[in-house]
Amino acid sequence: MEDLACTWTPEVIVEITKALAWPLVVLAIGFRFRSGILESVRGFFTKNAVSEVSATTSGISAKFVAAKQTSETRESIGSNSVSLPEHMTIEAIKEKHSSAATEFSEEIYEGISNHLRALELPREEEREILAREISLLQSAINFFDINKVIFRSQFNLFAIMAENNNFISKEGLQNHFIEIKNFVGEGLEGWDWVKYVAYPVSSGLLVDGNGGYTLSKLGRSYVTFMHKNPQLIDDLAKL
Image (cartoon, rainbow, N blue to C red; front, side, top):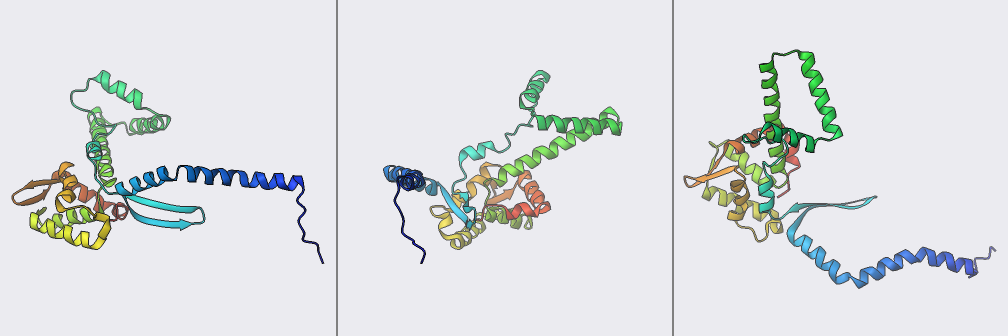
């Protein structure tokens, strides 16, 4: 019979020590700072709600949905790098282009320039095409900014409003919120209908008045854009 006895030679002991060194260090650090780690995790989950958790062979991945549509996020809507305020001088515009340029943006610039030269358009028509492209780009950037924080149920509300003269009464909105809160449960814990509608109003998607809320030009355009790109609707926060 094969001898299965283990000989504890110095070499074996050294190899075992090497194998256990880092796991033991990690455990020691974990016990030493466990209160701080737990506090950080608790703080993260206080500010964020888990909408989806999955385990794969590469580990556990989680997609988190912000539980608060913060004022900092609201202020970021519409403030993008392609915006050109009317008061900007040509020098300021050129400086902005120079500071924001990257290798990739320069490659795109060359492609656009070559395409325009090949079309041989009159100057006015070329300017019209470029202005139209920029307007579509800025619109899309605004819509993608909105998608970072908007809830699926809020978009559904906008879609319902779009089919009802772009309007919903405050009573109707409150009923919608109650239904959503009952459905998602803890996902909207601590929320009321005022907080629920705060982001859509402050971002300009909805206008308060006449006993209810009306979809603004931005709101109507956002709904149209999303209906043309339904895959983006499925990616919205599941609340």
